[in-house]
Length: 169
Image 1 (cartoon, one colour):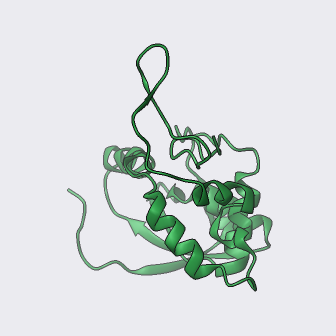
Image 2 (cartoon, one colour):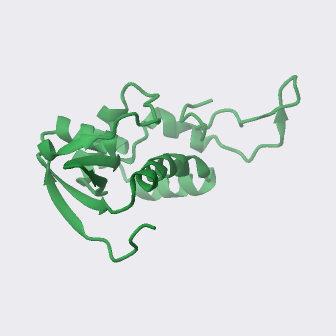
């Protein structure tokens, strides 16, 4: 069973960290690491990496892409939370962390309100992780009447950001 004591952040030099081999989550956007780098530049490195120590190696369980983006920016030290589970629990942690990102979707009216509050014209909108073009669709967003294609499948509303792929439709 995983130790559930208080979390402690420990700093590791970049050269003492190793990305997790065989991570089953692949980057679908070729610019993802560059986009993460922009967020790190704007806000700093805000989420510690989750690291599992095994046979003298510090494997990054959670945060492999943030690690790459920050290394590209010249970071040489990283805040980490050391995961103290077994190998099986560490593998489950990798899968669970990646899977959990799929359990949410955008509430477009709330996103629109937040963007309106945030965008006062003096900050680069891309520090949200969205481009202006991607966010443009939320201003046209209307709660959909069920839209169906020829097969009867429900379709996402037009002119909004798709929660599944992040593209504007």
